[in-house]
Image (tube, rainbow, N blue to C red; front, side, top):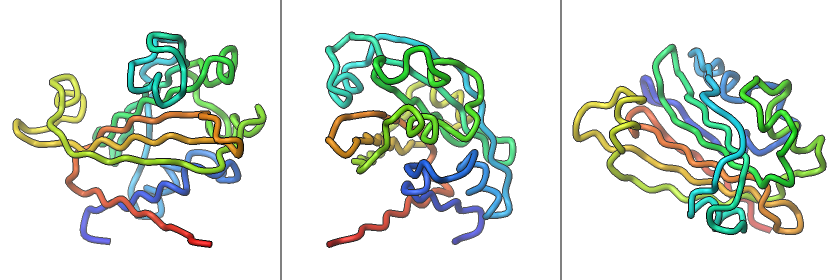
Length: 178
């Protein structure tokens, strides 16, 4: 790992057996401090792309958790996580409170375990609100990682949209074949 570089391995975030705050543990393993703040949570009209990912009607209701991730006290990622309402309504996923053991563990306790995930990563210019929230300089791009988690029956159980500056980022994917 290069100086100041954080390696994000998505598989760590998908396992319900991972204890507690995976982000904080990943940062601590690199000698850094990772924290997060839930900005808002609750039912919202699904953005078109999220509706398509989760297989809900465009404009239909989903549960959203919006967070800002911090590395050593500096904002480093904006994360919006969406769940179908039939999974998340009335659960800790729909509140701005910290979820004991993490959201993936809560999903598993509710009977929804991810079996596979699809991720897309694109580079783009940030919106003005993203630029301000991430303290970006003018002209600095962002990476947008979109992850869809599906259960064993290929039903969507969670969609994440993460926006981060590319500096200091390395995304690692391990692929098992067979």
